[in-house]
Amino acid sequence: MAPQQRPARSRRRLACVAVVVAASAALASGTGFAAGTGVGRVADPPAPAPTATAQATPAPTATAQATPAPAAPAQHTPAFGAYLDYSARGVDRIAELSRWLDGADLRVGHTYLPGDRWSNIEGAPNFLEAWADWRRERDDRMFVLNVPMQERNEEGVSDTEVRQLLREGAAGAFDRHYRRLAERLVELKVPDTVIVLGWEMNGITYTHRCGPDPEAWKKYWNRIVTTMRAVPGQKFLFDFTPTRGRDAVPWTECYPGDDTVDIIGMDAYDQPRGMSFDEQVKEPYGLQAHVDFAKAHGKPISYPEWGLFRNGDNPEYMRRMLAWMDEHKPLYNTLTDYCPHGVWQCRANPESAEIYRSVLSGRTDVPQPTPEPTPEPTPGEPTAPPVTPPNCSPLELGDWVEYWLGGKLCLRFDWFSRNR
Image (cartoon, rainbow, N blue to C red; front, side, top):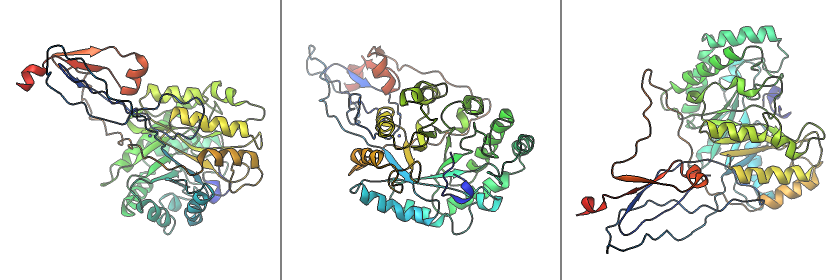
């Protein structure tokens, strides 16, 4: 889905589990993360406790019992925002939307590079400055930038030409444009920009679509990411974002691999006409498939674009989508806020606007740890299997707990020798 108000239509659950084992044992734990944006009020899982580091404590007596840490639930509300305009006006409107939401903390700024010509894809002068200034005002803000993979990105280029362009890109013909973009973002002191590269590649709209040659598309994506990561000072996160559902080609066929993807996103609008939210969840390559795929690949999820569409002012969709994100905790989400998708800049959706405002009004964000960019793999380097520390017995805590911890906890029996 391409926002109509962009140039040429170019459009973190840290499961914090604290366990303290006193007496005759020390607890060594491993943590995992799933990132996200909690924005609903339905079917919440148990609230996690804040992160704590277990300390090894000598046993005062031989019969002392392990004492669990006191429950200290804390609500983590990750980054959210809205696409408000591609230009500097979009920056100004972030504060205005926050006022409409009674001071809610919008930590995400989202815009799109024009996809009409290469000079704009490189980050045209005077286009990114306002966004960079906004990002640098606070360390906990997130700048999300959609980046096309081809010029003439919405000019109806034929499959034959797209196929040829993808192969040229895979061979390195366009590397210089992405090197320059990376250099420009570093120069502007926004080296941690989230790059939504080649979004909605499973559709038919864009010249950067995947369907004409998925293998060439994946090689081209990998080439771009490798080129941008080679620029000194960069800390980019690369977001692979198809549109919800199968569309022209299954988006899983376009996935370029875990080494060059940091986030697995999805653009999820209320369409097609007549499809219920439950159907959007269950359809092939739908919302549940997205969550499952990201979990299988160890990646956080995101929703760079979402909003109303074919079913008009649909408060049920708005309520359910907010609850879905509250449950599944994406790293960030940005509502597409213009007609027909939005709720603040679009007066055609008053019932959905009331739901959105009632859920998010006054929300103050508790920042979540940002995932580290995926490191470049070292050729020929073997992958080491998980290592269990010596004198340590794994604890069986159940699949749910181990999922959020990112692995098993281990109870050590060598505290006496280590604390004499």
